[in-house]
Image 1 (cartoon, helix red, strand yellow):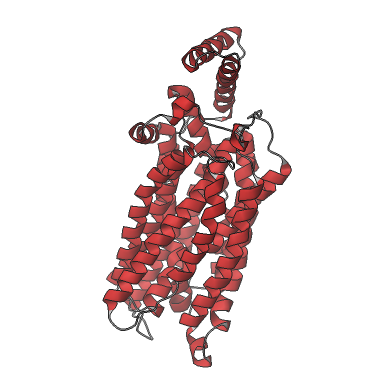
Image 2 (cartoon, rainbow, N blue to C red):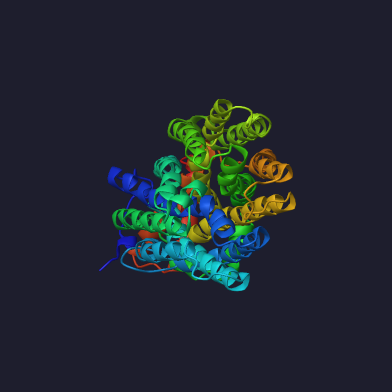
Length: 496
């Protein structure tokens, strides 16, 4: 009896609509973890648990770096998993419940008084949260590359994924500040905007929303691209080499690392920006809502143009315009709330390329498979996840270091002018510089639409020849030889 992952399927065919829609749900649930942790965990550490800013930065940095390295190992394990659900789906289905539990624990501080126990609890909890997020979300992200070989379909899948992300973000931007205020233990705490009780209950609600969203995706999508037995036998060292030496994958890695370094650092301290520079933590809802509306409009309307204008060109336009709007916010964001909201909207609009970047990963995987015969779906996505987590760790830590350098102290009722300047630099100027730097790696991307069509056709010929030979009882080595011969014959006939 064949498992689902072994079922014969035309790999380049369109993905059924039900699966496309289902694919976006896990991203919806993921943002209730990822965005919430990125936006509010730092504030929980410094202003609720009263962990010093430098210590909180160290927790983020160490945990994310450790988590990033284990991503590659887990990606290797996941892409070689055999189950009735496929290679990646079981980790989405069974990892989601543990992820929800770890999120709740991350926002609960049972210790008071000395910093040692609090730092240890926060550090262990954050490392656990990062690992379980990898299990569920890295596996989820790898699915787009094994549901179809069609580059255009991958853009659509990641476009739908981004819609799920923006829908969740919109809810979170509006609901989180008000939940934190309304669920406080006392009226006195409302003046501050949050307390330990409101944090815990808010995160409990979000964890319960995330769980079924992951399950909808895990239970409804199907994996269609499998690894050959020869590919499964490739050792971990060679798989890592396949990632590191894949020049096109490294383009995506570096672009996201630079761009997200600034973005995640900014997201992590926008609550500080609203509370101290704008004077009201509840303005976080309006400020982030303006950003989110712009992002939704951009990400819903603009990514399909990548099929005509090219993925690289769209990415270049995105990072350059984002950097420009951040510079404007740095200089003019505090002068007038209307100006800030308008610039936040435009900055959000410039972030339309997120689904395009994700669709570039399986393109790079196909390119490398054709070039070397090595396919590394999970490990390649893990490498991109590594760039995201490094960016989150370094960006978030750098923002806290800058704030600490300029004199921020979470225990004070009023911050110094120097501390306010540090918040503005960390929130806007540094992310702008990183956005401009992210333009450079994109100059080396070479997998345009025409090239990807050629790669897809060549891989289809090789896979079809291999399957036909195996069906006739030919040895696997001979099947590989026949697949190579079929490819060369197709090239001579002009079919590729």
